[in-house]
Image (cartoon, rainbow, N blue to C red; front, side, top):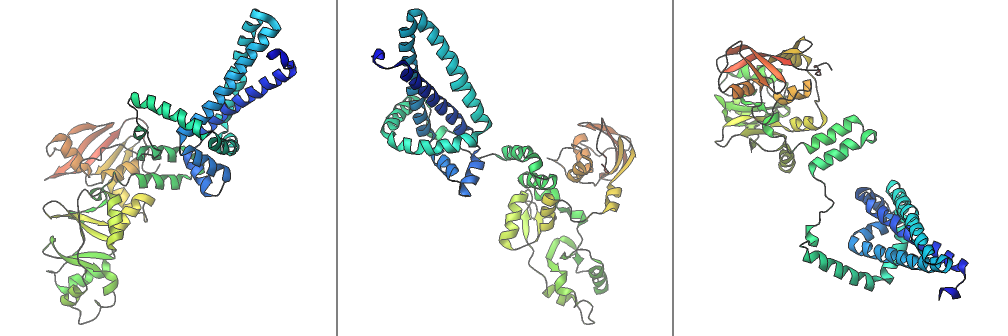
Length: 426
């Protein structure tokens, strides 16, 4: 039969078959290498090639079935044609040489080169190919369907189900990797904000709240002049109002409601109590992501954090959560100086009540944050006792020397940090 077809026609057909196989090989790699999120974005912008590619990839089994049908048909036909040509031109020796030559050509020009190009430039290859595959899939759908039924049957026998396949959703850690790898496409400031948002579920209200012993509020048992003095000097817009102690809270006072009242001669505690808002309580351990949504749902900006017994542990404001995302709204150098004082290149004096998370961010340290919230609490937990002055301990790469400890907590500690560490001015 081959003798009836001119040699030039057979060679031309061989080249066409090899080009078809190269197309199938390269386009398969390109379509499977597409970034699904970039593809979805381009499709949403109206890119027709991206829309078709996205539709094809919704059923990858059908697409792969079509590609393999076309590729195998082209390769098998090319192999048969080379065999016929080789025998015609050189007999058995020609057949051996033709087979070896075809193997080399397929390896370089049909597989490696097209697939490498497709992997490097997937969109340039995949989008034009999608225009070809879409009608081909409709034409050869019965054959593709039958092939997939048999292939899926084999997979079913091996215990693999379609529901076992992973989707294209990303975990939080995978999203962190995506943000990190965005590089210069996202500025450092915005990258840090995105990472902070991803970390909101790992941070709780306990980590950012103002602790019980630092709460500033209005005690109704004080005389009216002392209350007025506190209102005039307050730096906060909302203050808890209580009797005797903070656990007996009566409500929350918004200073905006009282700005023009407490200066009047007839101002009394009764008038102050009339302006109180109902206190809003949240349980300790609530993730910041959850609390942010609860603030939004309840139209609140200020909450009292309580333990399982209902005792108040601290207060948390919407601003505290937002600062976890965007950083501090205001800076207080004096406070920094009070908490951390550098002595030498690798040693710092640290206030025992310094917040561990803030200390880690400020100093680029890696103190544990899963337990106590303050340096004093961390040291006491590690030693299982209130230490005496002069006691040494090691936490991670930090050697800690107790400088002052009184009553039930550590007042001052000296941190010796091994290696090159960022200081607070770094």
